[in-house]
Amino acid sequence: MGINQLIKKCKQQDIKAQEQLYRLYAHKLFPLCLKYSASYQQAEDNLQDAFLMIFKKIPQYKHKGSFEGWMKRVAINTALQKFRKQTVFEIINDDHLKEPEIEIDEDTVSVDYLLEIIQQLPDRYRQVFNLYVLDGFSHKEIAEIMNISTGTSKSNLARARVILKEKIEKGLNKSSARSI
Image (cartoon, rainbow, N blue to C red; front, side, top):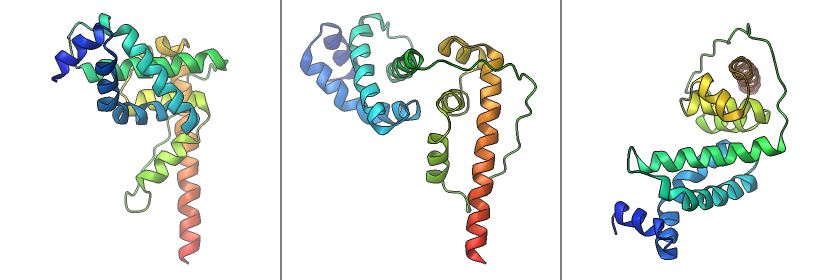
C-alpha cells in the first residue's frame, strides 16, 4: 500500500492502516522524541502520545509538503506541550550573553559523547538547543512553540552552549590527562 493510500485509510480510522503507519515511522520519530524528553521512558510515552495526536489530526493533513515532516512537527509539538504542562520556565532577561566559540576535533570528541552531554542539559536549555541547532527553528518560532520570549530563547541557547563547551573541555582535559 502506498503512502497516500495509507494516509487515506488512516483518515477513515482504519486500525490496520494506523498500525502500518506506526510501524513505518516509529523508528524515525522516536529519536526526535528522545531529543525533547528527559528520559528514555518519557520519550516512549511521547512517541505514543505523538501517534495518538497524528491519528487525531491526520484529517487536517492536506498533502502539502512532506507527510513525514508534518508528522515530525506533530511529534515535536506533542513532546513540548507535555513539557510545558509540567514545567515552569525561568524567565531570563540576559539578552547580551555572548555565544561561545566551540571548535571540536572530530577525532577527539565522538558523536555519542556529544549526544550524551546534550541529553544532560537542563530541560529548558536542551529543548531550545535541539529546536535551534538540530531542527533549524528560528528564535521567533521557538518562542511561539515554548511560550517564552525570543530573548529567553536566545539566552537559553547561549547558556546551553556555555554548558556544552565546559563539558567538552572537561572531557578533553580528562582524556588528555589519561593519555599522559
